[in-house]
Image (tube, rainbow, N blue to C red; front, top):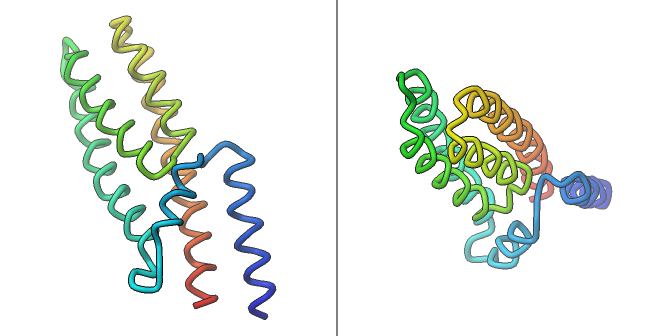
Length: 140
C-alpha cells in the first residue's frame, strides 16, 4: 500500500513540474525539510495561501477604484509575484508578470483580464498542491 502511495506522490509531483505549475524553487524547499520539521513545505505553502488571499483582496479592492492606481496595483502584484516565486509557483508568477506589464502600459482592461488569469492559476495550483499534500499525509 505504501509503495502505491509513493508512486502516486511522485506522479503528482512530476506532473506539476511537467505541466509548468512548479519550478526548482519547490524542490529547494523540499530539500530544507527534515525529520525535525517534516511538514515544512506544507507549512510554507499554507502561509503563501494565507498571504496571497490577502493580496488578492487588496488587488480586487484597488481594481474597484477609479481611476486605477497602477502604481499601487503594481506594488501588490510585485508582492504576489515574490511570494509565488518563493514556493516555486511558476504559472502564477508568469501571470503576475503579465499583470505588471498591463500596469506599466496603464491598460485597465488588460489588468482586469490578467488578474483573472492570476486568480485562476492560483486556484488551480492550490487544488493540485492540496491533493499532493493529502497523499503525503497518508504515507506518514
